Image 1 (cartoon, helix red, strand yellow):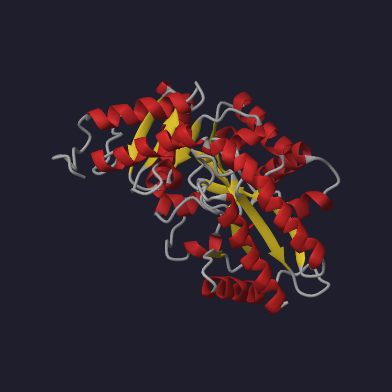
Image 2 (cartoon, rainbow, N blue to C red):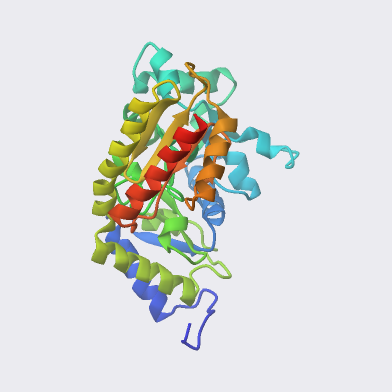
Length: 358
């Protein structure tokens, strides 16, 4: 902030170049080029644009974007339409007919399905076709790497089947890592848990750790399909300085490895909760420093959203803040830099709340 330049439009700056070099070096080799933007939802919009430009370059009318029910990609119009939180879309009025959705393969859905994740993907694809979607016109699948409210990941074989299908049918696989990326789940990008290589990766939130900054990463060929890749404030010097400092901290503090290590601290505490209150704590899902704890009604699998809201409120009164999902789950995502003793102290506060409210 002491420098004389806080804004540069899309003209190059040394700090931008330094940040981009470190970002590209930190990511897999197939992610060759970056568009810098201001907000995650803005990066989602750019991914939609590139996906459709790419699809139309293959065949006219190849412009269908497929999302998943329940996924979230941002608050702007395109991001909301490709997202799967359908009750949020009433304000839009006319929805894009070339954006459609498949069911999300929740664990409880897979448990009732007589087959594996690959077979469930093919079933969902067949459902799309039965609903009148011309599969040859699909330009891209948009995948939120996990649903944050419950730390719910896709089955690995479901995503692998999706990746195989997209390659065979000349369409893109796009991962939304706005919430998932930058060490949150014990890997630099959370999609690495699926052992696939995406075509485009959307980043936000953790990319800078503080300042408004987002990015779309992909191959040079894909990124350069959008000649108008400027952004008024995207990649401004102050945001890039924060992004560079963030990546330097990841290296110096080994934050991806720390996320892996602290997963076991969190898991140990949460499993003790489940043992102590087996009739009130149902599923526990999570990886790295992201967990979803499902709070149920007594001796039931029904989520108790009201009680969970009270738990969040009581924990806040005791000095521990968390996102209130409104869904009957505790979403736990502490800072990657949190000291072990503070992490355990914070988790113990939730146990105090259980003792008081259960």
